[in-house]
Image 1 (cartoon, rainbow, N blue to C red):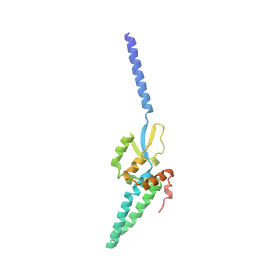
Image 2 (cartoon, rainbow, N blue to C red):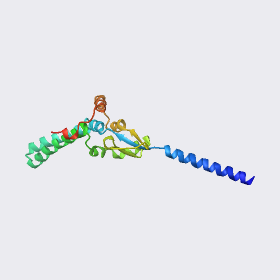
Image 3 (cartoon, helix red, strand yellow):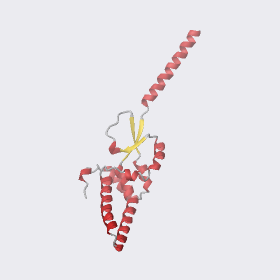
Image 4 (cartoon, one colour):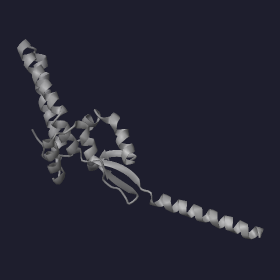
Length: 170
């Protein structure tokens, strides 16, 4: 009887271990991905426009005051920011400068979606079947409170392939 009981316990432990191992094998690592163009568009139609307006105001004031050094700096800064925004909004340019503004919100989005990592979908070169890619684009876009017109543009962006970054020029 004692041997029979030990055999049952051994079988139960073996079955429990097997089930636990099987469940671990089917659990996929969840990675949050996003379309950086959509986030750039949401940012571009809100905060970026405010930044550009600020540059224009500073530029007008610098011209009024005859501040040649500041004029030259702003004449470089404006077009540089615009070129960067074109690379981000139409192609696959990095949006690190944009994400830096909302990075403190990312742990909440990660937890809400049960993802362990967040990356632009354009940076994922390979993933195997053990990875589950979770699109969090719309949640990141919401950080910039897009209006309906912006949401429509973002929907159109999602339907298009990115322009090769080499084709983005001033």
